[in-house]
Length: 156
Image (cartoon, rainbow, N blue to C red):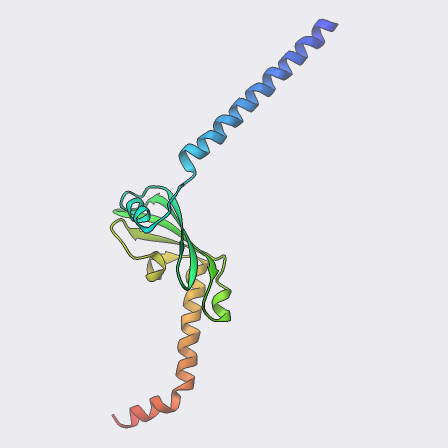
């Protein structure tokens, strides 16, 4: 009877070891294959874009902090880039609502401008909110300047 209990314990230890080993292999595989390398400057980002190499990069400018993740190849000669607005430094209250939103962009490999400069190649919540802000600002501008605009049309 003791021998049978010892065999059950050995089986449990063997199974636990195998599960632990498989978990370690999966965890290591994630970091070797899927986790993007971190870039520190625009040159690294541009190099990654040329090859659609998986990277992440936080860009700080006067207006905002952006997180870019190049996720790999897309159709043709393009890369998929995820853009996340981390923090607004300047802007109005409506701009602060954009913090934490993301969009996915399909960028040509040779592109050197940042994805948020041409949101027509992007999809996602950040793009939609940016478009809403632009439309609202245009609407407000038209309402504020309606008299001046109608005077211009009278002269035509």
